[in-house]
Length: 380
Image (cartoon, rainbow, N blue to C red; front, side, top):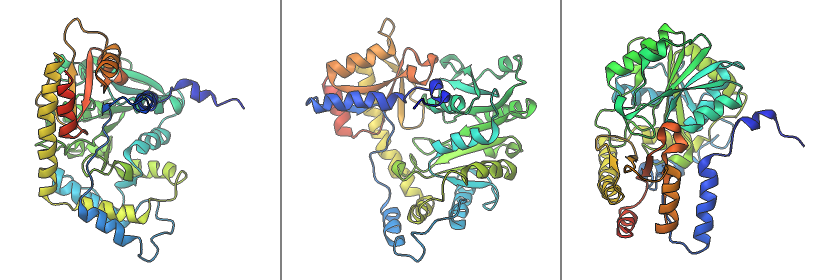
């Protein structure tokens, strides 16, 4: 059986391949410390777990669920956005729960892209934006993000290019992988750029509540819903990565278009998971304070490890990663991380998996215990 031509446009996800290699080393008895991926190692709150446990005996819990999610979940998302971002959204028409925000990238692309439509993608940025664009027949057009511009696009330069075929633009603030943030003025400039060029702007926003003193949503910009969507997730904020709970928010016409795709691809999120998600969204301030306390301690230790390697980094970056510039004269990013992997039994992500502008950088995940980070430091 010959596979579909679309598979020729993508490769197996880097972490899928590399983690097989890492598991092979572990099987050989190597004491590998995995600092490569952002999968939270902490547990959800006890209230979330208790809610899940109690919900599974409720009437109807094991039946098919609504494609749009429980009304109570959409209301909890709306309340969360109002309280945390001062953003008002209609839970009936402007919110669509997702089985993780990653599926939202596919749903949005399928809803709005025709074959040959162009998509503006950040370099560096989340690799899935490019792979999904290719899978649906779109044309990926990278725009540069560089340290000297604080990892923000040159919108004036982009405006001078032919954008007539551009349908979507992906942004991610706080930015993954660098941890850079955007000011309100910068977010306004993104929305204005999208509106002026007839582009649907999508902000991927799962990192606002990790080591961030100023959580921001692009939907807080006046008129943003006309041309902007925002993806968000419970994975990082509430240690629920494996639960696969995300959401997309925006204008009702855009949400309805995405629903047309989603309703043909699944039959609703498990009831108990939705109930647990509601409990998470209703968490008090102590949850966020305790989470930041853990990540702050880990980040201070990770800075020490980066210092050992002669790397430089931005202490003001947010999110659950530390993005580090390699010292001058160092090996390429991929050769550097392989040397660390095979010499010190430590796995770190090379910056190049996020795009060519990631060359010369590596990324540490903070989803590693303090004890393991200290052990890594001692290996140097």
